Image 1 (cartoon, rainbow over the protein chains, first blue to last red):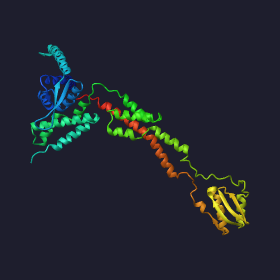
Image 2: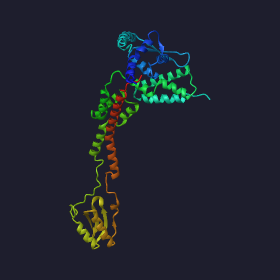
Image 3: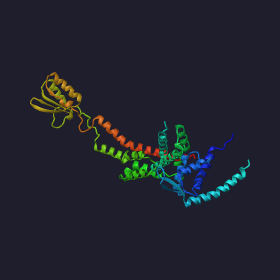
Image 4: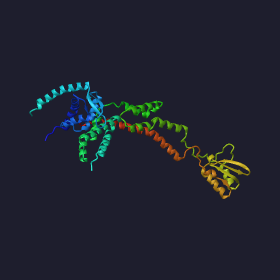
Length: 112
Length: 282
């Protein structure tokens, strides 16, 4: 049995995951837990939920997302994530590239 | 009995905190707090009734090592020039009038590579660095603190000093004839005082053995003598052998400790550099 090399899968995930996060934030701001839950619900996107938090921290550091604390009906205040203008620009640029890349790969791989 | 997930949570967060050891303190605390909140939120959503369910939940969150590795991933390999400067200045900066060492300490504490413990070691072992040890070494040898003055370098046998016109051989002869009185041995001065026919004699004692020899002769003739001087410690102002060894050890430590600290900090620096390299598994 031949399987796709695990490092390749993990590299593809790593390269695209941050744009999936940005895409989730495109329409509304979200609480970290909900964001992670939604990402994890899609099969094959996330293997360790915990690793999303470092990713969110990096996106914040790079200015692609910003955060704000909001009171929660139950429990301590929650940190919400929201897309910045830079983040939106990065997301749009990636979306265009991704479609072209996906179509190109599909062109060869589809139907095999 | 209801299942209490707290011990499992605490254990997991401890492992995470340990795994994230290489992160700056603030970042590590934030990460642990975020993961803890995630666990609490997950528990509110789907409460767990057994350890198995709790472990499944933690599995989904991921291994602490993985999360820490993801957090340690840095887009740019950071330069360690500042850290290298810090180590060098801590070691030899003391030679630049102590200011160099102070600068080293400032750089040490500003770096995010070292942990609090590393920084404390770097600061207190040894303030001033190598300069302190070498300064102490110079001070000790220049001041003669450690110089040995115990050595009883004997005078040349039979030598005569001005004003002491009697030789040891003569004194010995007088003693053989039982003509000496009030004999006092003074090993500290390498002298023997005695009274011979009403005159006071002062004679150089060639060696310790010769003193013993004379004492034996006097004892044979039952001539009382004062040999209390020979019992005394002949060292004056110097250190005992034990003290000298302790001093040498202390000095060696003063010199070696900053070197060891530099090597330690250098190794920690290397370790952190590599610790930040592994690719995060997502």
